[in-house]
Image (cartoon, rainbow, N blue to C red; front, side):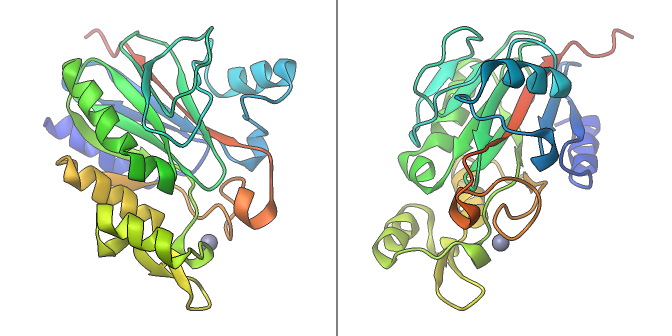
Length: 244
Ligand SMILES: [Zn+2]
């Protein structure tokens, strides 16, 4: 890992939602990641088309590739025209925006050393299905190692009461670190710990949570806390880098 890359990753953690984060990679290219906030509006893939196009353009130019998210582990090649059922998108094309949407589930960018990048939508079902490992594996097949994960707004354990059986199931897959407590002391899922564990299983230890809780914070929308239909977005693209 180059020192430049490490420094870029560290700097990004201090920045706020809606800002663009830039990661310089070992091959000289740059990965840009933008995370929208409530003020940026609704990025649900099924919301009104005209408004969505202009909202997307205000965040990152180009035809965004998105998926119809189904809480699974399927990784697909980015296609700005076709929207298929999947929860992770990968691209090697310079300038092609790839995006996932969330409202409690985690939007994640996979920052690689070179070549393709990926984004994934990961709630507890997707994590249990193995979306993190599937995405890291697909990037590896295409010649890239995941160096760093950038995670946007997601629900915190203090707001995420969770059924005992489901909690046992997630803990059996990702360890007891996923067992949290709500603000009132009830059993909760710690989604951030689950994400960190899923990446650690695949030897990725640099996982950065750059936004707060969707439910008790102002970072994004929350399906669980406020029954909101809107979605915030995490969008990434590869930039050619500085030619010098
Ligand atoms: Zn919270």
